[in-house]
Length: 179
Ligand SMILES: [Zn+2]
Image (tube, rainbow, N blue to C red; front, top):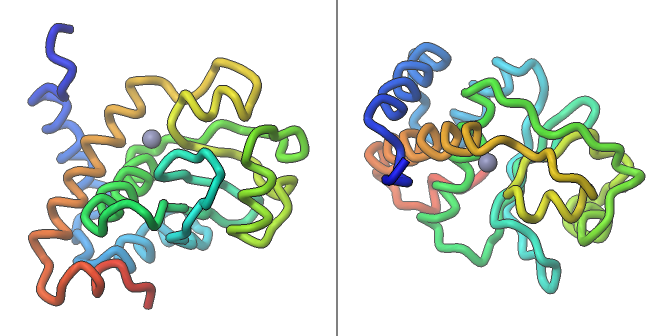
C-alpha cells in the first residue's frame, strides 16, 4: 500500500458498522458511553488523567473483570481527547477485544499507573488495548493488536469524533464533562 491513509472503502465499512451498532448516534461522550455500556453489558468509566513521569500512550482501554476503563492523557488538547476517546470507543463498536493479560505479571509503568491513577491493583486488569509499541514492553511479547484493528478503530473513532464535534453546541468542556 503506497498510501498509509484509510481507503474510501474502509471508511465506508466503518461508517456502515457504526450506524448498524448505534442506529441513533448519541450526541455526547456520555451518551456514547451509556450506549456502549448497554451493548457490552458492563459499566465503562472514562478517566482523564495526568500520567506524570510514566511513559504511557495517550489513550488506553483497560478491561477489568466486570467493567471497562477508558483512560486519556489530560495533557493532550481537548480536541485530541475527543479523538482518543472516540478511538477507544471505536474499538468497542468494531467488536475488538483487548489483549488478555495476567495483571500480576504486568511490567513497565502499568502497575504504578493502575495504583496512582485508578486506585486499583494491576492484578485486577485482565486485558489491555493501547498503542502497540508500549504494549509490547509491558506484556513482554509481540502479539499485540493487529494493524488492521488499529486502522478500523482509528477510522471509526474519527467518525465518532466528527459526529460529536458537529453536534457541539456548548463547547468542548461540556462534551468532555462526565454526567
Ligand atoms: Zn487502538
